[in-house]
Amino acid sequence: MNITIIGTGYVGLVTGVCLADLGNHVFCLDLDPVKIATLNSGGIPIYEPGLADLVHSNVAARRLVFSTDVELAVAHGDVQFIAVGTPPDEDGSADLKYVLAAARSIGRSMKGFKVVVDKSTVPVGTAEKVGAAIRDELEKRGLTDQRFAVVSNPEFLKEGAAVEDFMRPDRIVLGVDDNDTGREALAVMRKLYAPFNRNHERMRVMNVKSAEFTKYAANAMLATRISFMNELANLADKVGADIEMVRQGIGSDPRIGYSFLYAGTGYGGSCFPKDVQALMRSAGEYGQQLQVLEAVEAVNDAQKHVLVRKIFERFGNDLKGKTFAVWGLAFKPNTDDMREAPSRVLLGALARAGARIVAHDPVAVQETKRVLPLDFADAPSCIEQIEFANDPVAALDGADALVIMTEWKAYRSPNLERLKAVMKAPVIFDGRNLYEPETMREAGVTYLGIGRNSY
Ligand code: UDX
Image 1: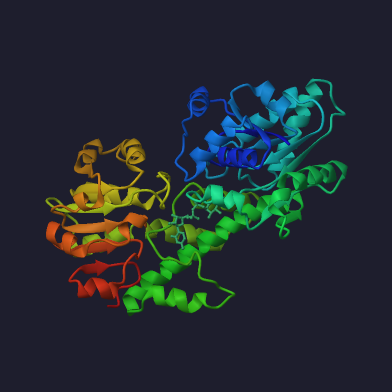
Image 2: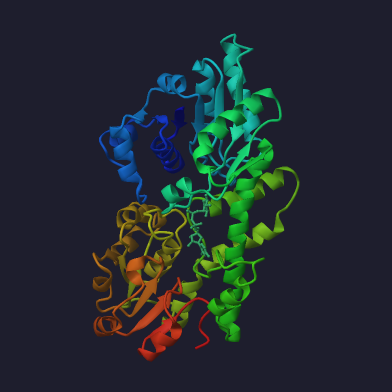
């Protein structure tokens, strides 16, 4: 099929590349000429495992093109995916200006029936606005009878596993209108997603608003599980329970399950913080307060400080003359994404308290250097206290403590003898509960995890 993807950000690029790999002819549009030039010269603007190879092979097979030409883009695809950004407004609601601009550009030059797919995460009711924007442009062209359908098809990709998630989805949520154009669009989308439905049906077809809502509900539920466990972990520390044992104990109940119950330093990234806020905002517009989500957000904000608190408890509030090794900066492994990363809160607090920091991350150092000036706008000189090491062990040299912020594989099996030899004192603050407290104690390492300090 001929597919157009508007927006070559994270979601757009992964969607476009994967659909091309399934044999479709995909035209990826972006208004940023630098990004398109990068892609056309074989560069990939984001770090995502497996993506580069797929881009290169599909470009070589002539199934994938990148361009800034809006008219060509609209002419190409029978299906037009809108996958542009929805940055939070000043008040936390999703800003739809890019989505609606994309809709207008479709309306300005479309010919023939088009299925317009909202792929960006957008509040309930956005499909209606997209439809109205397209209709408005069609009317200006005198094409009041031109048929098109707007469907909602939210993505559930996880950064670091996006290609895998796209290629092996657990569900494909599709919202369509219950009318002729809706049914026609459904048939087109069924054909597009047929490769995923061979062994069992993964399509969840529903009305458009339910599909839009599903995306927010999923992320809000996952964020809730995390905040819930983080709050319990802090209590576990006080009462002498081990949150990891508790996770396993409750997870064995199939109604609960094991996943997304890991206590840590709070969730970050581009989705959970933004979507939780946007859902609360939408609720507010209908006069409803989402009290659970308010608590989820407040607990998460506090949890980003949990290790800072533990560090201050041990070393006092003045960290001048102290050196901290930090392993991991990205908000999670396999990405260089620093958006809302808990490490930013930690670096901010430690540097302001006078500490010297030597940080390591396998891929996010560049991105960290980019965001540091933003985080230290009020105290730019603090940035000089933050250095970067090329390998994890080098970061430990002379450190008073090691702080772990991201569960990269490279950190899972440290050489403890080496660690003890190079650090000033073997103290680990583990924001990801990577190690067994018992093993650490036996090795003579002071180990402070999250909700596991009963040993
Ligand atoms: C998330 C959703 O998982 C995905 O379905 C949606 O499309 C986009 O948002 P992503 O933000 O890439 O994906 O990362 P995810 O792996 O879900 O992790 C989000 C954050 O939660 C990370 O900061 C992670 O460290 C944290 N987390 C996750 C926990 O603290 N505990 C857990 O048990 C799981």
